[in-house]
Length: 330
Image (cartoon, rainbow, N blue to C red):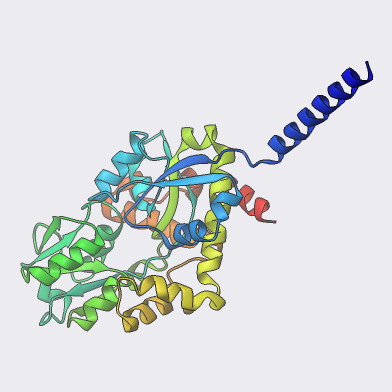
């Protein structure tokens, strides 16, 4: 009988130990599907340093889409859960009375400049020429139209506005085809363009003020149904942004940038992204509310949305998930 009791004790104890070990194992990571035009640096850092793993998140990066239209389609169809791209695309996806897509985080301010082919030294020099954009009615194209309006010039009448490709591809097309007279570029493409003799005609911020470029956005229904996953994802993303912006990690960031950029361009890009006041990357991936308001103002002015008057940013931005992500970090 003692032997039986001892055996039962050993089996019971073993089961308790096994149960404790199982409960100590981290749960299987939940997958979140991300669409962007590249691999955002905070995601690269969060993956490299285990921040996603820490929060029980696994990121699946979808192939980079060929255009903003394709990116929006990936999100709308449910192929992607969250997008990291110019937030004006999120605004454009919403219909009157139905805010189906919501911005949940910031990421980058716009450092866009209008770059022209060598030999073009003024905005009026673009009269009768072809400018190239991604989608003709969102984000950076609206910046270009605003700049050209300062000279009384309008697309279709005074110059051609050709929707053709995303920023990196537009830069390559400008190098290959001199008939493409100008486009909007940001670092590192604007930095490389200057080194190839391209001419900076205007900085978008001169005409729009601070402008929110990249941010995180998702379908409102998906965010509600996956709030905990989204908050953990954003917590890891914020940690990745902090890591990328920390001066102590400059050498690591330069090494990553140097995989496709020359050392000089990598150094200048780093300076534009994180080292200067009002750089491209925003601390803690926080949304700049003034800059987002300017996104809405520009859309109201150029597209005539909302009767020409920008609505409150709360219609398109829900800070709840971001604030809970910050709480997780604390």
